[in-house]
Length: 226
View 1: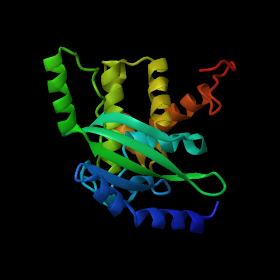
View 2: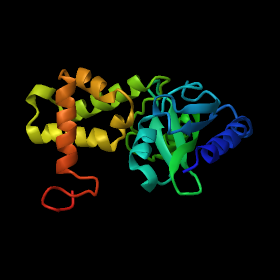
View 3: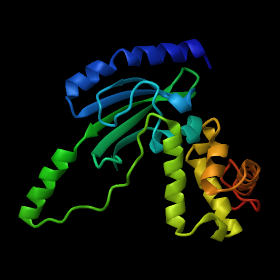
View 4: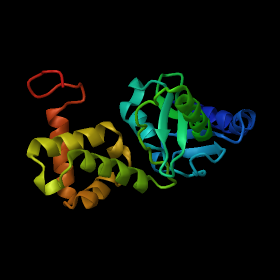
């Protein structure tokens, strides 16, 4: 792995994001992420779809890509909704160096809110129902907001507070957070602990147990596929 090579790729892409955004128009945002600094991964950005700037944080989607490491693949044409209600069509294209190491991503975010509203109106007039709900994604300049959002979303899906979760449910929560790339962020264990109302030591303990039960090879302690 060559840091110089990775820096050169980042620099080359950073110089073209303005051209990408200008070509696709005001509804487009082009972003270059450097996964080597996940807390402030945005190193270049043009457009203002998500409201972030240079030094901003990656979203949940980016953290999931980060968690998959060199096994990550491009995420293309997925829909999310921002906290302010914008419907966004996005593509995240991973960056690899010559050794195959994943170290960043080029992301395009297109605000299709107005287009979707027009589509819905036409569909209503034609008697066609719309599709299902689109998941909301947190885009923020600080990684803490993204981590908090992921933890809160898991809590809401459990429909009960931490003290009422069974041991299995607690381990599943930590496993899921780990798979989403949360613990790749510096200081995330402390932040997760505070969000759940437990000690940092307890958070590390649950994380270690979750990784033991569901190993990095995707198997549990008995060798069964999880």
